[in-house]
Picture 1 (tube, one colour):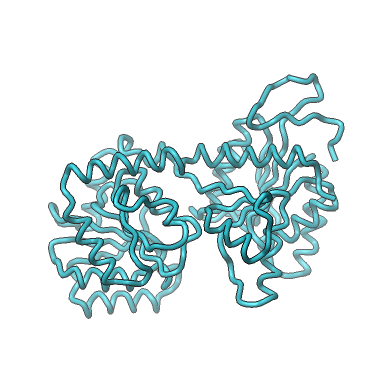
Picture 2 (picture 1 turned 180 degrees about the horizontal axis):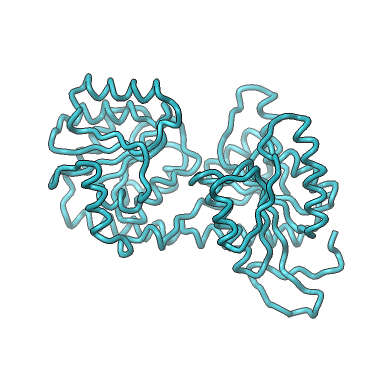
Length: 403
């Protein structure tokens, strides 16, 4: 389709280089919903914005959600379709809906970000002879053949974007995807939002007061939704081993309806006598300020993180970090330079790392902060993520359409 036009490169845009037929590509991203502050949703907005900034046209198809407004502000267009459904009948109907959208809007690239919509998008891209890209955001479940078959659609892109090296390895090992088809594009941190110089002391003080933090006490923070694999129980047990009452620990994140697990955590806090030490915070609208009031930020995940956004954001603000030694954390945390890695699920090791982090001197802390900020700016910025993604789009434009 659209073979009568020359499509300019995103990464080396030369407007009007080849006459009136030249143009930038139209990119359609497909995901289940534009929910609130999810990593996939946020990345979708950021890439849409980058496409628009490069002179292209950005479309997003989803069932909708609060972040659809962010797309409009970025200059993109949102198309509401029931692509969140796993019902085979609805998925089949979505194929026709997406073919119509691709053809009517002259879409050049379809970028699928989730499995259910990817099945419809892949078939639609084949029928409409459109380029197809996928992003592998996690390991998903691989317990049996049917799950692996369902997941395998995420390897059907002409290029498969993996959000970390660990995910790239998983895609090669489990699905046999050739390495030359995979492109590693780490998630990116908004360096404007997560810049120490852009966070006023007033914002930090406001949060400290709201959370009733005692002045002068070191603050340890574990951000992340309340889910067993996020390691909140390991964190609480490590604090008990640490044995200090002159610190304040924050667990920041929604229980997302997991009331039973939250009560379990609250009981564990009480049973260890940590009622005055630990604060459970359901939600935070100002995470940059939350990181800034912390002396150390922890990720205690017992299962590997596909990337580890918390570790990247905290380092961007110069905070020392402690993470479980697996998954994406190994790519983000530089041992003894920007933080420490501990054995997953080992509360004794985590307690030791906390003790070390709380005892580093001012000079060492400042050196670590400088190294952490440089690490994120050099490797994990939003700008880098967008440039690499647009480069992938250029690759598939050069390959030609599916079919």
